[in-house]
Image 1 (tube, rainbow, N blue to C red):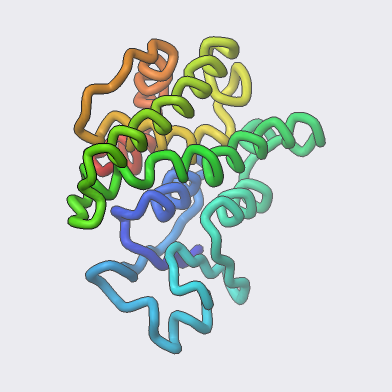
Image 2 (cartoon, helix red, strand yellow; image 1 turned 90 degrees about the vertical axis):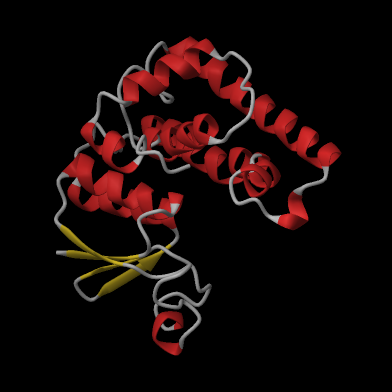
Length: 207
């Protein structure tokens, strides 16, 4: 039984929950962070010195960093179709996982804090417009990739890369602003919605 520490509303925790759903991994989840158990206590810092969720415990093994966690779970418990063992196929999946964490993740930061979190320090109109434009630019990259594959982000089959990317797409559509038309992204969103794990942990009204 995998133990997952982190609140279910966190996009990074939802990566882990969706991965468990795809693979069929039994788990127990505990609410930590942002209104729940504090993450700046010695107890939690002993598990993750960054004071961030999620953290998992798999027996006597403790791991933090959401994309590392989903890679670990897919390697330990999943099938090659989700996270290929062959070097080039795996690199293609890892490329998009890393892109989500670095480029795409950074692009939505200001807009998300402004429009969803309603942060008072993120309400400058020019900065918001710039943030939305940058976010749209990266979503355009994703749209072109999905138009090329005609299916999923790393190819014709669903893979581990679609979990962080799919949650990012959910955040895109759930953030309230006038979205540019990205037909391949829209089709992808509906395609992902056929998966029970995404409906439960992704397209569930939580950005």
